[in-house]
Length: 70
Image 1 (spheres, rainbow, N blue to C red):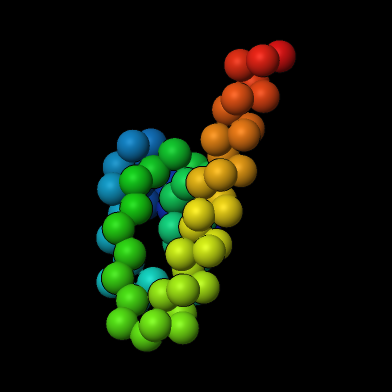
Image 2: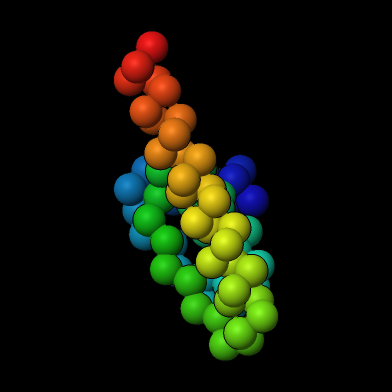
């Protein structure tokens, strides 16, 4: 998914995923420095996506902190 996100967008672009599902596009956007808007009607999928995207965001923040500390 990250490869596809890189092919169709530039860093800091905003990607819209109107059928977010489990959040794979959101995670790819975080990992490739894109902004992300996700829409999901199913509560179960939405909850899964929120957990995955939140973890990816937290991991990215930790990575940036570690880079600055090095």
